[in-house]
Length: 67
Image (cartoon, rainbow, N blue to C red):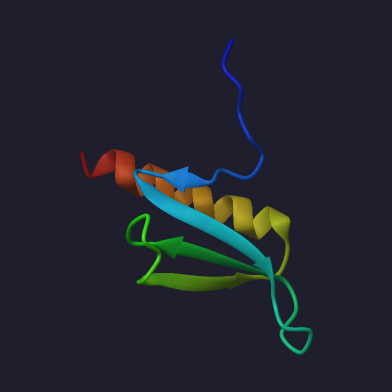
């Protein structure tokens, strides 16, 4: 049986963090890190969880297509 998490913690070897955005901005910040040391990465602000899941899915498909 395969277990799928609603919020993946890693995509293609890149750790992912989620955090509530600043109240003035709102939404959810999705941070994709370069490696497990979490020194470099990029942050994308998503207005809601649906958009955050879409972003993660696009990144995952892009990583799979690059192989």
